[in-house]
Image (cartoon, rainbow, N blue to C red; front, side):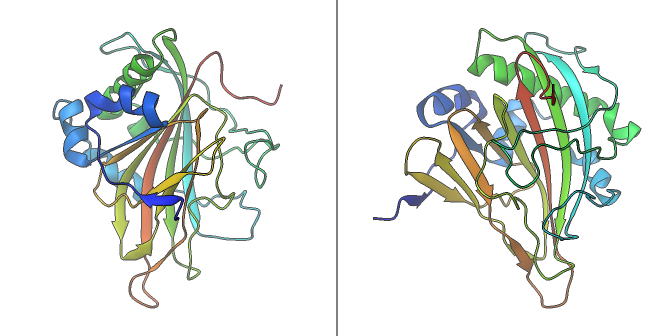
Length: 251
């Protein structure tokens, strides 16, 4: 029997907490995200994906990933105005969570100031913090890291998760698909952390969402290839992690 089953249901944002309690993750289509965010227009953020520097830390020798990084402290009980930016810092993961890139401080370029201060971005961060507290009510302060990713096919193939199936060492991971351009592949797979079963699906709608309980599941996304031979394709995602207690640091 195939233990990786295609996901058969989509979740409304209001149902994320019970879905996460049940299976460790939830998928919300773009219309569900819009309903959750009460019509918040996220499209002004999309142009920021056109100005990303290359990832200088890829250990597989690839040149297919560009990214920026930012960090904030959030209040899961606040309606608005509770986004606290922190000085630019390195992204760090232990080897236990990232066997390929763990154990090193990765100083990615910071978010563009225009994105970091954009009202839509702040509203989104506030909404994510409230969702994290809805899933874990005992926690109200969240240490959030924002990753702005573009994976492209300039070398013929792009790998969204070169480290393979993994956890991030946080409480929750929010993965928004921002754009898919002339690609095939990019199937997301979510597995039980301590079991054999998993599900697979492909995010295709701009601003659809995958919400993960990082303590309960591991995840990966399959490589992308150009839809048209020799034409450049790409996959843009916004990944925001939320962790209680502190940021993940090497000390």
